[in-house]
Length: 324
Image (cartoon, rainbow, N blue to C red; front, side, top):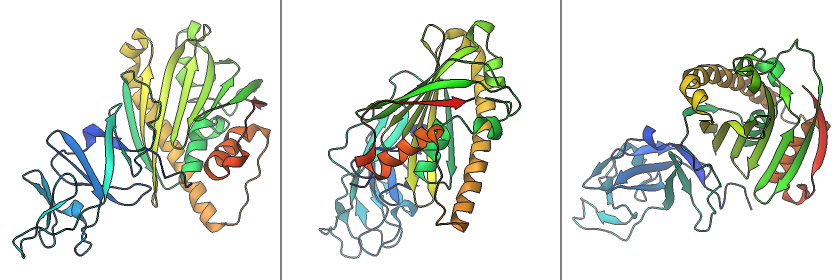
């Protein structure tokens, strides 16, 4: 099965869509149009069955979607209700997409059996949105592996010039993905150096939920989460968009940290976008280029197996080491 099937995909934060205006949205199952009527979101493939005009360029009238080309009208279930030139309805119908609002994000699926992912039920403190032309695999790997941070985010997360030390890590399979736990790591960049001294020794963890959710969590010495970052990715032919929620899990951090996190993470996101765009451009120039992986690339390799070769994904824990 293609990983885009039987899956809920995040379209964006619900607040960013205008309820009674048709909005075009890209998705793995094609261009969509969404709007809200009678308090519920409705979603369809963005094509009028009559002559293929984009319904997202139409409008909502009396709770119904109107095609901009010949004025065909469709109700919130996709049923045609009126064709002006006939002065009656036809049997034509739109291809419906199921929508769900959860965690402040609007999700879509083309499947009737897709299980909803186990995202956090907590209220988030900061939201981040962005896009890249990179594919889902490379965007997920960029989010979940930490070895690029010394160079791409030099000084912010880790430093290119800081003394490296070996950290043991273990990747453990889970029913819906995998989790990686690293040894505790002292502060090596601005983000952690800004924390109080007793919070500067943190245990990084990475969690993957198939196929499109990446979670980073930083635990304090008593193994309680301090910061959680949950990135929900949507893929289309243009690349990836993401809707990320940041949870600041201490009252003092919530009070002082919102502005700092928003500002610093904004810089980090731009740095990631730049390197992913460069990678994408170069992979287009060298389409047959095979990736050379080492034991330090365990996360990326396992992501590849989950997305493209499920028979090869690990069923046992994998121990590896990184010099961070």
